[in-house]
Image 1 (cartoon, rainbow, N blue to C red):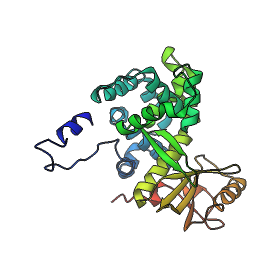
Image 2: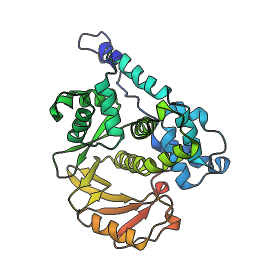
Image 3: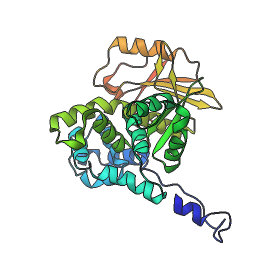
Length: 305
């Protein structure tokens, strides 16, 4: 980004001759298409396919993905345990390209967000508790957040009908590492395979939720948003000109009870919108559409052809 800004600066002779094309992670849509076309070869089902597709967005993970993906979380565990030195180095490389140093405050922000501190107030309090900033004041970290967004490491989403944002790490693998290290200190010791699998199972539903929100927003050209209230928490609210077009809940588990559907209905009925969905790993093993809520899975939104 630093180089492109200089090449395309206001006095550059190249100005206007090239289009700017931001390069981020591999798109989830492309990952899903590839795995779906080869699902028999990979011995993979919908839920497993989605989780592997999420991790596949990171180019450095592709070499780990061989023909047998029947145990995706074990594969993700291998990738995580083999990348504990690589991930911080890659983050440092991004900062070097931007001619900045990866300071303890920047790393503290990444760790705070990865561990679930979503808004600037929570992030500020986390940094203050670690003695990384002198005062618990969200305004002190705003420039750090802005820079991380500019680098493409962090994104923010709107909280519906509130003047708040939720900050997320864009990289699922980076999120797994910093979450694991912040909560369980995995970089300072050798965690067992069982412990890493438990950590992945703990965090994966939240990663999936954020990936689905982003995927559907991009698919339909809508703005990402989520709902936060005293008596409800809505995973995804997709907006068109600030008006909800689609709302949904993500239930990322192998079975769903009638009580889960009832709770989802009570949550989603708080928002008036054209369409309400319940996103599940595989709709074939879940209850059919109920109370105006459409039960869907990833293959409802991906054209494999």
